[in-house]
Length: 346
Image (cartoon, rainbow, N blue to C red; front, side):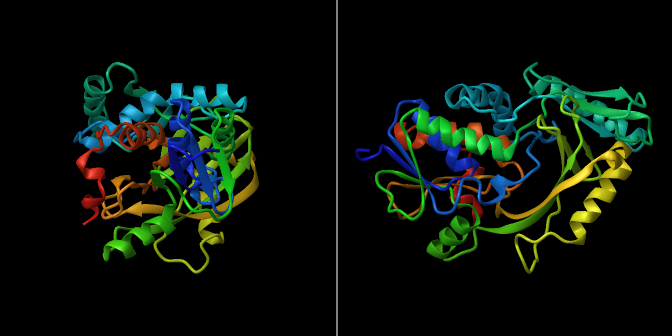
């Protein structure tokens, strides 16, 4: 390849998505991953693309909404270019409501969603039916939203890499010196490097554990209850996650906390007891101090940019992150929300 128009460092979902967006627009793209595609948390199991509650609206929620609404077209484009599945499907989500007060709050949010979600999705309170794939609800009521989607983290990473290559981009595994404008999307290592460079803490890692069951519920909605995501995937598995740990000895080790996830999930959705555990997974997710993705120029390094801090919402944010980062780096168009900038981590 001649000198690239853009080098992306990091083969997680932010890096791959930025590289794909640039390649899709006709740029010469080089992506470098030091280990393997999806080596960090982007190679996990859960893949929940779920919106924040539609209230107390802010730039972060608006950005996420844009990204979730872009997702179908974005992932369809990846599949068309690569010829590979991503596991994307927008099948919605169910959440149990504990009591009348919770139901009243949910109905208020339904009105907010009607105003904020542009008529492209609904948030509504519905009666529980007693169906097998339905969480127990003390109030007999559930929230159903039609915006939530799923994705296969591993399939989508493989498909993104193939789509980049199909558009003439280069995907390298190993160590390399970046050329041209550079987007650093290197997860926790990148947050630590940025912090060292700036002389202050800009983020940290949070360990998560998750597991996958062999149980075919591929056409069912996600369940979110008691802080737990239960996500049916197209390959006949159900992902359950995740923990949030700020202290650990081994970042990739699973333990009794992962086993507790399964017990909790079965209490929420008893049909899961029929599934067989296929895999337990652990990894460390990068979280910026602002808790929003960290995007924009690397201070003091002209031509270097940051796309990091996806934490739990990286896959849901990726289409919009890719759009605004490529707009900035290749076209000089800056539409990054102030709360997402590196300066917001102070």
